[in-house]
Length: 50
Image 1: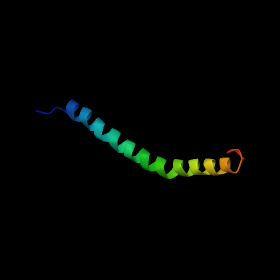
Image 2: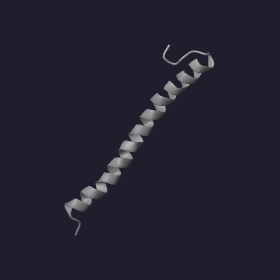
Image 3: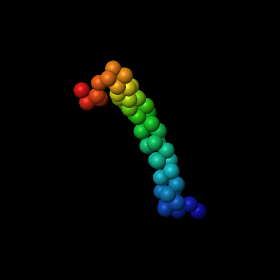
Image 4: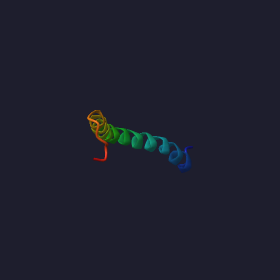
């Protein structure tokens, strides 16, 4: 028999993978744009905060 504790423990792996997938999608769309802006401003000799 599979008891509820084993089912809950194994479901944590699934939830962790789903959360990682969502984070990667968000990071690829947002952080890549931010990094490109920083690189562009650095190439022009400006500080990123300007």
